[in-house]
Image (cartoon, rainbow, N blue to C red; front, side, top):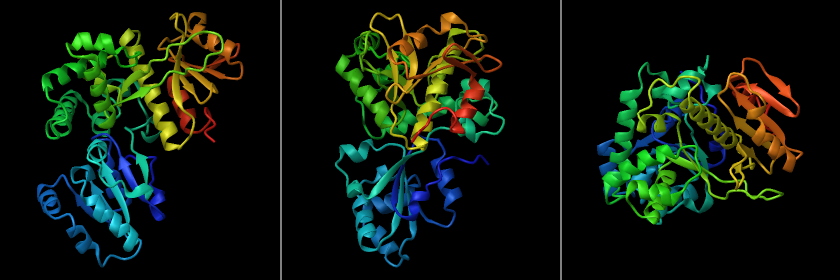
Length: 383
């Protein structure tokens, strides 16, 4: 069994909201860490109906629980009214809860009781390289990092089922969008924008919908944890920079599937996009698991001459990703331009080179070695 980095040790003193996209392994993690905990699974029809009809029965069933006992409610967003009972039990019985779900959208939109700051928020990301023995970067780029997909010999049918499950459970059941066909088309167009700077007007034209609808659809992807934005690093020293964000699906395999990409091979443009996505995906998870206050952003000049894929903190680290097997001067332009404006920044090029080396002020790291060092806290000082 894969050992996950997220340990949820905070449950010793606090209740927890645990969020994560579908199939990231939340339920498996909870059963592993808390095998004896009282567990309410709202995906079970009988459990859902029983608690939906009478949320207060949760109080009756836990009235005699021991002080400090851990109680888990999985897919809590399906019954927002349960949070009032949870709040009462936390306050009056000093019970601790892990409230798990794949989307907080419904809770926010219906004005549910979010426990007044009495529960800390944690996120479970897809697998990261440090959790996988004998990590295979080529497999990751083709299969993605959801546990069931990475481990499968052929993930295509599982990816198809995954997208179908998302559309059914998150979109249709909750009536989030009125026109499913236009949203499905949007998912495909958004895949074309994956790792790219977002242009709402162009995407709206490609989908045949209004730009304001595109913004709402992107908001849905964020709130249901299927995607995230990376903002532009907007502090201007010399060169004017683009302000619009970049978009990434939460897992590298999602855009691959939506665009029909199979058997991604080194040396192709698609491989380069996928490698950038994977590195950014791991950086986001790393900063999240380390609970760092350093922000992830990117840098792109307004004249389109220079770009750096990932900026960490206040220009402390600049990381460019190239899928070349031998990095040379043409691959350093963005990093050199950034270093000229921010001379204290640590400049890193991640590539498919066979061995690490240093060219002037730029460190060049093979992608797999970079990821290993990242999770050993040898790349970024998170404190």
